[in-house]
Length: 230
Length: 356
Image: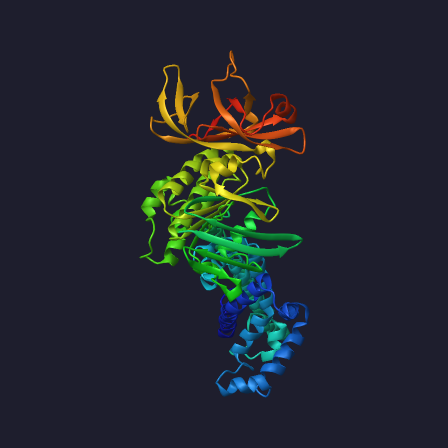
């Protein structure tokens, strides 16, 4: 049942690659935006908040189309990036970008909640002990937010693995380039006799999602013990 | 090193305007809740920026709004002991203790980890996490953490307020040692008269955002005109030297030329102790009382009488070099003719001794 053809393996490998990059690359900005929304006050805060959450409420097709309008090879930003050798359109990098944008609100929400739960008086205490703002962030805020950061990363990874609408709109469905698991399942379902292959990929999807969830549980428990909450 | 503070700050209908100097030793900011104590200490720490003011430690200026100067919190080199400890939950006790030391640099002056763990009796706790410490242990670690940051000034905001009596008794001796062994100015916020009597070298009394009185602890506490918590909480502080123990289980003390007898104290002759005598526990007589069960009847003279708003009055009595406060009724003041210069006998119903 589970002997996959080369095309299916490629889709699995590509999905993992896309989701991993989407998650890793969005972690630093995700943490920054979460801290900004949780702790700072600045003009345009509500605008940023709305912008971050937009992919959550827009139809994915719309997000994908907006990405195409921005990062397509003929679009201003896409053309500028092409000059320095970064191309998103119809590449796996574009799939990663689409997945990252779609997963970003989930990641930011999880991290923001954990940052808001940190007692700011601990950060004050660190400052009285000689820690500058940067050191307070690195030695107090970040470690205490770690459970939320992990949760956010796992959530983003899972979302990125399952991203379909924005990806297929932005970078199409090219086997070996942009055909991730969901796109591959969709493709197999369009072809007569493709149900078996689709079912195999569905089972793999389920297994990967469950694995990620279990891993996050184990990590979260270990971190919680370190932080002293449990 | 002396701490100089002058601040003006107005917020939410509260108007703070204080100026005082804290000499070496332990200076208590004393007053009821809402008198501005925490605002002052947070301004010294740099956690709150006052609208106007100047703060300097040992001549080094930390804040001078006139010159637009404010040293950021992390460069003020303080040791701040908070009411709730504020230990870092993700670090062990050892890592908590060394947190400030790391920023101060390895060559920073001040006590070593071993000295601090000895002083505070926390060596067995080093590998634990704060979640597994008792309230008293947490506070001792918090004190140690502040000391190891190589501070030039220690700040403490009601560090004992969240603890029960037994835990307070556990920590007070460490604070006394801190006051006597480290040559650091300590600014200590409190609204507990017993704590003030036991710890303070200098007392700054705050009331509604103003300094009511500053001075040596014994002087300020025995002043009938300064009762920030009301006459009920008033009480004098005496320093006494243990002169010996009697066969029937009492300890004889010499308090500024007067002899006091107290239930046996675990102290050796020659040691000094601080005594707290609440004004409520002192009766006055104009003739030497006879046939009375109280052991401590001290002759003295009335120094000052302060009538209260109700039926009560506070009387300051000089006895030898010591000063006592007695809380009596205004009717008694009239009946006994209590006025400055009047010789009286002070009958002490109770004397609290801060034991180790």
